[in-house]
Image 1 (cartoon, one colour):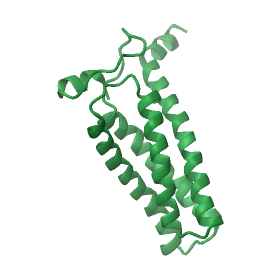
Image 2 (cartoon, helix red, strand yellow):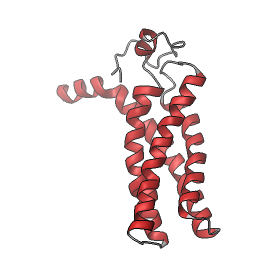
Image 3 (cartoon, one colour):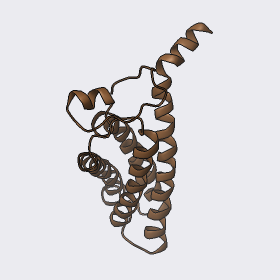
Length: 168
């Protein structure tokens, strides 16, 4: 039990951050999934347009949730810098998702709702989510020590002061 406790203590901060990111991600995913399906399957909007619109709306939900909850303890490195980098990362994530939708629809010729959901809402969003978690931690919501070393913004009030945490 001591080993398990030591491992948990070492990785507690990352596990809590990942859990909060996951909860925000589920909410954003539900927005993305519901809106993309309503637009594409309900209103007949093209798959690329539907997925683009739904992803943009879900990205706003994601930014608010991640900045104010998942990564609230991380440095505030300036809203302009954060939003710019966040947007670039989400555009890359969107390209990953749209590539999956485009390959399924226009290369493989898969046109049904199931193909749209598997390609865009499962595979594409899954790949983009892994990329986003890594990129948010590394480039958007910086560890206070990293932000200070780069001369960026003010440090947030750490949650659980005195607990060491990974810097990436």
